[in-house]
Image 1 (cartoon, helix red, strand yellow):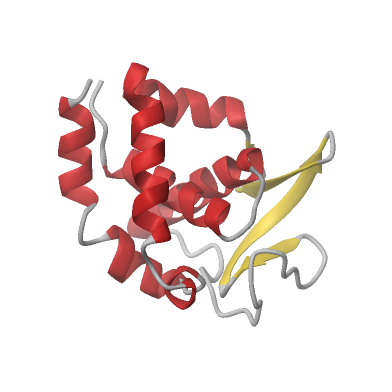
Image 2 (cartoon, helix red, strand yellow):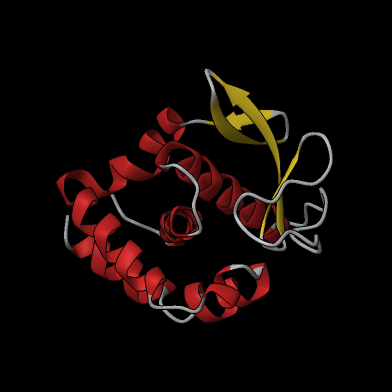
Length: 154
């Protein structure tokens, strides 16, 4: 299977969330949630702001049912004590992450995850805390390069 922009966005967003302090399973949920949100927004979905909150970091939560990672907001829920994220009434789980993302990498997933973490760690925290800056500075410049690299590694 081909690794596309969706999988690249998901992996980089998950790495972002993990670097900013979310536990791994929550980070996977965050990454998938944000990739789904951005894909829906590109198709014209206007389901709420991608950012604009005043959260200071990964543990900042404002209002019932919302979670802020910097200025990026998602709807939250909890299952078995694990913080997960929802969009369109659907919870983004580790199982869905595995099905939609990890499976595309096959046996090269671990290497891609390590590469994504190392890449994201190279950016200032302020960039990671900004949804717009993350998209512009972290994701956009490498999205096609990583999709091609990670697809050919399979």
